[in-house]
Length: 255
Length: 284
Image (cartoon, rainbow over the protein chains, first blue to last red):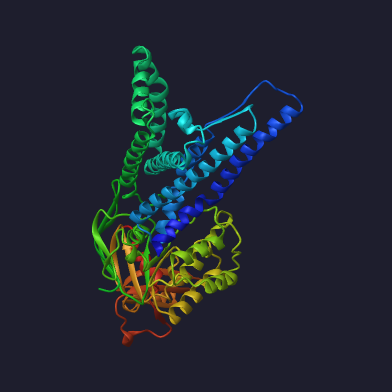
């Protein structure tokens, strides 16, 4: 009973922001043909093409931010109402799965709408993230249900990973004291924007190549196989969730 | 075993020893006063009972169930803490509704009724509440959850005299209608002393006193009279407090009263819990 209550509570915390986000994406999509219509009506920029690319990545960023904001209030609410950390964590996984599935379904709708908008005019060019990563097999509607399902599965795993990453970061920050937070942020920026670029430069770009090759290999981009990407994202999410649990299990109320 | 049992609990924060091998038992259907000076370890103890903090050593059981990470055990306890754990962006009404979801026995009608008595507007956001009304909001939930154990940590913080009086009245009413265990941690000892059945005094993380209020108060008495009379009477006794008001002097004494040698003009009253507390918890 109480366990499902914390699931409902966590989900409710995301309800309003998710609805607003979906409306904003739909509004952007609606603006494209309207803008295109006005452009052709007044013959403005008649020779240019409207490129809409990777709009289906927007939910991943949105869910990452949701993850970043999802810990403290829910953790405190759980403790206030006698919910164990274990129940909170298990129900958090259910929430992550629910949100990821819902957003992946929404993304499918966005993709169908995007392709419909694309087909309305030659000056509108819509392409999704899967099309960019895994080629035109995801760009046409000819693949039928199976391609949509494949795309749905890929996006679900992608969103799970982004949501889990955001959640882990906020849990790490919660467990740190002020000094640790400052050290963490400073060292992250120093490593990411100073040390790694210097090493990369000294290695004549080899570090970037290694990282890109790793990304290519784990996401199955060269072999054009999204299932390799899905597998890697699932493994990545499991690692993130494992680390999150290690940090949550001994977390206490802070004064 | 019924009740909340605390066995050999130790908790440290860095080098500070907050609780030192604390062992005690809160029996069902009693009102306890958990008294101690600032930093004595009262809130730490309540937080450990309710799984908000982990003890370094020792064990806490609630009706025989271990309290650590155990939903069935925690379902039986509610802590109204000094720190607000409800999301500050919520309205009070939303918090009440969620409490109803979390606690099946939560009485919404009663909650709205006492919120009205306190003058709490349920539509207000929690973040907009003053210190006093923040306490009232938490009192409303604590008195409405209907769990067997309700823990109050500084329940009257920021409350004016009228609201404090109302809280004590509602607590007694609630206790009379449907007995439960209330543990009240407060600094306003004089005000709560009439409510308490048992008193636990905690000092530097250790339990100093764990007795029924009646037994504790029978350990001494207060004597009032003219300064000269009182000075003569107390010269061979253990005095823990002296108050002087004009020519009237009141002394608080630990020990048995020998009524046969009581001089005329002296008035004897029962021991003042607050004075006893001050005496016991003053640093040497």
